[in-house]
Length: 73
Image 1 (cartoon, one colour):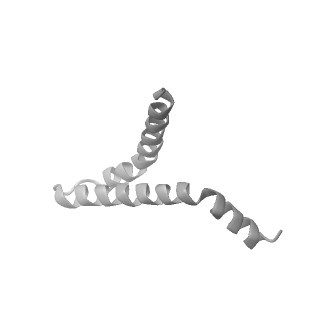
Image 2 (cartoon, rainbow, N blue to C red; image 1 turned 30 degrees about the vertical axis):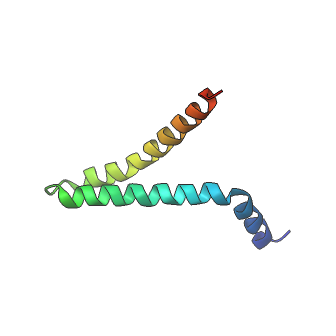
């Protein structure tokens, strides 16, 4: 199996999850960019910290969704 075939198979198996990840990332970056564009000038490290906190937000959001789904009868 060639590398291209393996990549194609991986994408087919994980298509919906990859799309959700992309949408979450785009929404997070847009939100942080808008907030920092509207607020008065902030230090650059705060901007990067807000961007990096998207990783924690991602796992927290999807963990809470899984917990909610597991709770349903």
